[in-house]
Image 1 (cartoon, rainbow, N blue to C red):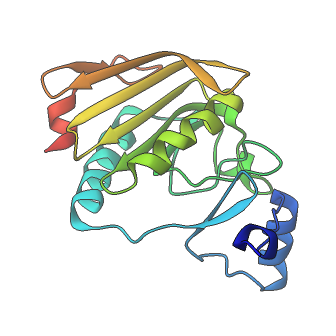
Image 2 (cartoon, one colour):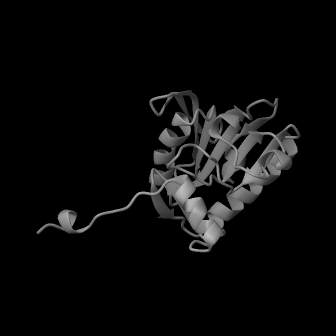
Length: 187
């Protein structure tokens, strides 16, 4: 008998996971993300990831002001079976807008994942974000020393445009006039 016939998995919906949080089955701060119905354990951050996200946070808080909101490692409602917690999501609205619900993908201006050891998972999330119509998705790859800029989401879960930017390249933060050198994000 193969392991496949013995081992079955149970997929969850966002509503089921939120009910588990509300009832105390899952802790609100438990390091989990719901991705395509599966609860995925989020790895602890190492120093390179923590440093890069701290640097990125300062940049984003300076660049964005109301009516946009910078959210760090907070859920983004993208589908009935996915509730990722990107490193950053810049969304239209304020704290009061999202007091009783998480922002949707189509309310995002920009979603950013910083990768040091999670490149494959963060690449896989691109399809989730594109399906949710997140207009721009950045994957800052610390090991490859580049920024992937995904834009023009398509309903089939792909981005129509993917640009690979290297250390000497510049990128503009969406809906701002702020230009950043990729190397400064990677330092």
